[in-house]
Image (tube, rainbow, N blue to C red; front, side):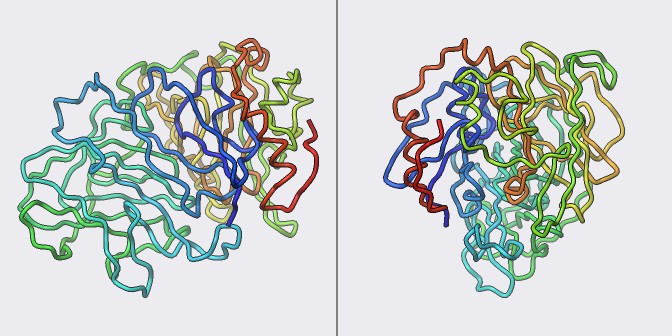
Length: 450
């Protein structure tokens, strides 16, 4: 198991504090054992459902991950539900019986709020979500997985989506949702059925998990107050699955730029492929992302502003300030590990074309920070504005794919980063020298190449 670490605050923009984004070798060196680093940053206007996780190699797959919620005192939907607290957080994760660096198999179990059962395993305890008949609940469903997406349902209950990835949406009624790695949804559910037990299901994508519900796998229990302490017997067929094209931003809904494909200041295609030579590796626009020897944040702060001079060479793209950026992210087939959920640090974005659609929406698409890009016959188009100087990762959130290069970094307004004059806490400056002298995972004991 990896012993150094760094922590990313998934979905937090880190305006003016990009050093605290937590992406190892992009914004910082890892923290070694017996040392500490305090992440101290303002959230400014951000509210909603987020999460934290290790951003060092594949470490979060071994469990360093959890929910991170910023409650909104001005929530526009606060009169639409009665309960929103720690009891209404639902996390979906994959679990392995091998440490992440040694993984050879698909996950053996789906964990809902940390509990789950494996194939041919024992009938261990399942998570129970307790509700009271007649009350309305805001459930925050968080995709913590390293690999699979999950088809999420609560048997015989409709869900009204009001948030995607920290951004409010116009209400949308569904009865199932595909939750990809890194994604989050808030849904309002009314406990309006007979007092009983109902299955909660989180069925993993078939090529990346072990789908099915035999023995109570991929499941939790939705239990009404007064119901017996037994497992449910319910069955359910979804008729209103969530489709991303039906989600619309509640605020700031109109994408920047001109209302046609390519109508941005800068259009960047993101094409990727996988190679086996002999070990698998991804290339994005013909370059494999590999961790540099000096974090990109420090490269910039030391005066390196040109993309051609930033390491890793070819994997860093310089973005000018206050411009509309359009990314066209191409999908890929299952044989190439697709579909891929792509996450952008430092921003949310407008999804003007979803990966499973050929239609564009330049009026009111959903805004979010993690998006499924579809199969090899599809592609996703997103837009954002470069109003947040920093080195921002764009990567597949299947951690095994990021580990073998499925990523790029945007050096957004590097000159502006220096002008921000970020106040770096003294321990930050010590991270790299200490890591190089005492790297616990690779056995390196060298001087930091500053």
